[in-house]
Length: 414
Image (tube, rainbow, N blue to C red; front, side, top):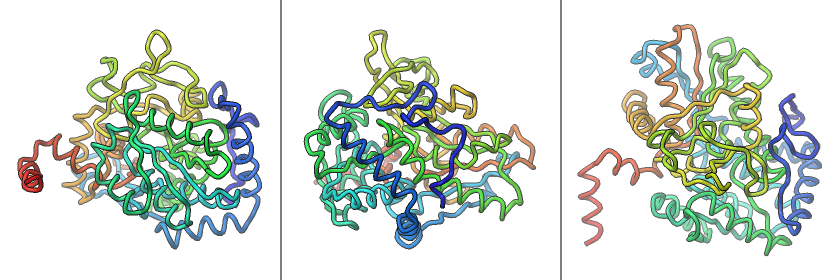
């Protein structure tokens, strides 16, 4: 069974990864978290649970996603071979559908009739709305008002799927505030509601649950790259917001010490500019926020610092506790890419490989572009493309100053 897998980097029984993680939640939520933990421990041992999850991944979501050799990009860079794990070909357009399916099965087993979710880039929101429609749940999605404006295509699709979208108008009006709003809802409606948390963050057991569902990404990569190259890759690269796509790729490789794992954060307009990036490993400090202990970007008074990323999904001020731990012990190397580098990587990938990836994924591509020419041609890099880029059309069009797109929009306003 895939859920039996464990590593030396896993959480202890209290949900701590070293000093990170844990369950720092309001007293009213403790019974719900304990209920979720018990339900998951039981489900992991149930072959019917695993069978249903894998069947939905295969026959509904479209797994396994392909591992594609980026022949043109590799030739242009002139170094290591680059492979792309194309998670954008999942139903709903990203890796998020995978843990949403798993949590939906758990919610049904617990007798919940309503799910709530938070979203930044909108991909988790679309995935949550998708599984809600499939399983017959009522669905409410919290989304920062800023993100509602810049990710309007995903808002439209969530609404078509039957979800209610609630713009969050306090704080920075982005992902961290959407998480807070969702937690408040859960406290009020805990008896009939499951909080379908969207990443490997939050109070225990959420970080481990979402990682366990997402590990299917790394499992597939192991099988695919061995079939194509006859060996393990030398490098794995993934963008890092909360950490779901990164932990999904990395988890099954954690004890393959010869494989170098690289997480890429949002360097924004420069990591030396306070409030203009979201690189937690370039200035983050240990804190407790939203139910768990991890690295967060904070000011001198312990308040959450403002962040910035050209993508809506990587401006989260914290990082998943297991990733914080893996960075601390040196198992995962953390780098960053700036807005300018990300837009350049997005354009280069599209023009060389015909793949329009999510801006979040372009962070990983941007670092691969810098790394590959420094390596020999025998080395293998696998880049996790966490999602596709349709949702980013407004952001990208503005970033590249596309005049035709602007003129088209004007015609729709008249």
